[in-house]
Image 1: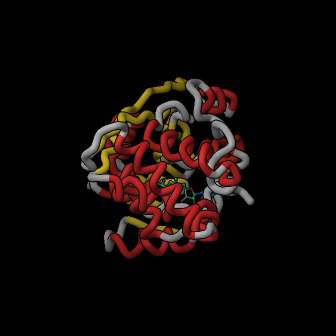
Image 2: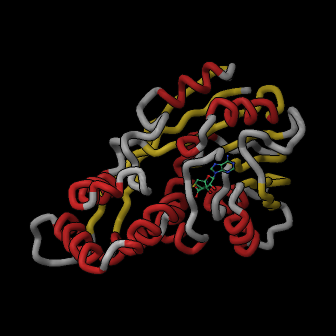
Length: 265
Ligand SMILES: C[S@@+](CC[C@H](N)C(=O)[O-])C[C@H]1O[C@@H](n2cnc3c(N)ncnc32)[C@H](O)[C@@H]1O
């Protein structure tokens, strides 16, 4: 399997992750740059947070999006009728595009889920016109406090969850410099790295808990198979962790970090 990202469905993805991608898309594009004309690629588009941010640039003539989850591709198609946008099912490690055919290539929060990220990065380089830029971003393992709170609470209460949607350690490339090194070894020039920050803000415990528990296929399946008493014990532990010693439920905001890299092909 070329990915460790197991989707549960487009709506569940939107609630658990798509909302953060939408927030991250603007600082990511500010760092990556958008060409003044031409055709661009969103490799691993998900439900289209970045694709739609690219479509806000009227100077682009074609925005091509690709993801191997058919239902994400369908959700993206349903979100826009912009004739410049096209979305298809495909593998970022074997892009179905011609060499030197894009004016920019982007991949937002994808490469740390791809089993062979080197292949995906070299494919992004292959499809770029000479002198064009590719850019990618991945979450920082240490820069995801709300997710670490979630994962670590679950590990403490239900150790069997590890490997069932709860990662058993940092994903590849989620530390500073790792994605940058892959861009350099793929032959990109003028490689630059940036630390992008944004707030993951939750309205209340339910807003924190429900999308995380039901948003990702493998953990949701594990959770739903637990006896009710164990699900309730987990919920109470997560609620205590979210409340963090305060008696009132309500908004909480967690500063979160992604590593972004760009390079010239
Ligand atoms: C965390 S999501 C990010 C999606 C989107 N870029 C966003 O920011 O919302 C990771 C995406 O990568 C896709 N993906 C993972 N491996 C892939 C591969 N080898 N080829 C195409 N898509 C892949 C998944 O299906 C999923 O949509």
